[in-house]
Image 1 (spheres, rainbow over the protein chains, first blue to last red):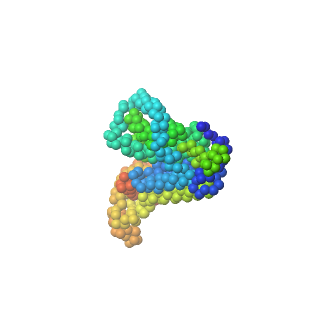
Image 2: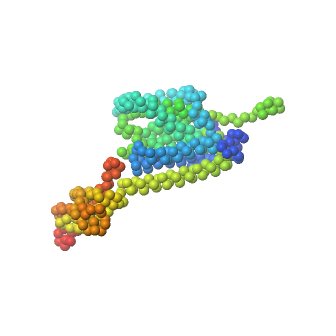
Image 3: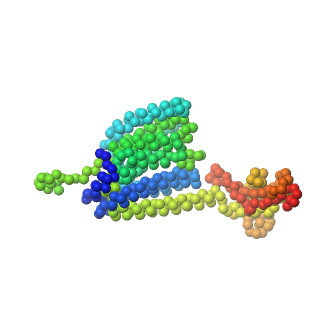
Length: 247
Length: 178
């Protein structure tokens, strides 16, 4: 079902009982869309502050990151409540797991093949499981990769994608916006930004058809593993982003 | 509600929310909720602006230690002399570096006796003076510029910064030297 902005404008207010926290009259669609823009900008700004300002000022591995990240999560949770979004529809469910995984399987296979070809033919890299890092190969993929993937996919799809859909409706505009935000947060690592833009397009597209964060996190972790296994570290720079990229 | 609809022969109209479809989240937002969300966004922005400002001040304080004080008293063809003290730790001797025309010349510890510094109450002891021998410099028409910097270790010694002590002094070598 393709929905555009015109549909959204014609759709009118939410039925009684479906309104977000506080009840009462619906906010005008234009106000809701303006707020969605501000929400995406605000959460992106928090991530950029953590990646750039905090690391530049006090380095990596300290609690200063917790402030902007904590504020972003507080805003996201508050926004979900005000907009009446349930945990299930955000993507914390099991019912959409297999449909999402089916949608992901073929593009992931194609993406992995493409990465292997780019790494081998263009960058001259040899395939090394987990980028040659034993810790990453054994523990990184199942534990750290999944947890980190789940966190990122929640922010990206469960929040940014949903707000992008308030703006543009379901379709390529909201998918492209979601992927662009994802790529922006991986700058100035150009290889990683390109990879995350491509991955962001796929994950945002899949989320709009089968919203399941667990399947996306699994895909995220698997593709990260493929990425570090196929592309040389000289290109990926240890997956560092933000100010840390220069260290 | 359901039975009423059936009895009257009408179809029960239930809201249909397509799972995961972000559009309806925009329509469920109430006017009051919109105002609350606006306030939350403003509050978050203000908090982050203050956080970044605090981070900048903390960074500046940590890396460009504002409590390093000192003076370059003399700069000529023979020596560059002065004193330096860390007011945060007045008992500690500060390491200083001499640069002439922007080029590193030498490093020394500011531990030479300067009773005037102690008498002025600027340090806990008199041992805060420094003296560098001026290296042989070719004569020229233009002035040479001497700057002395105090070393400051930050980030658990991970980084070291140079903080200028006093003002740059100019001197001339050759004809008309100061």
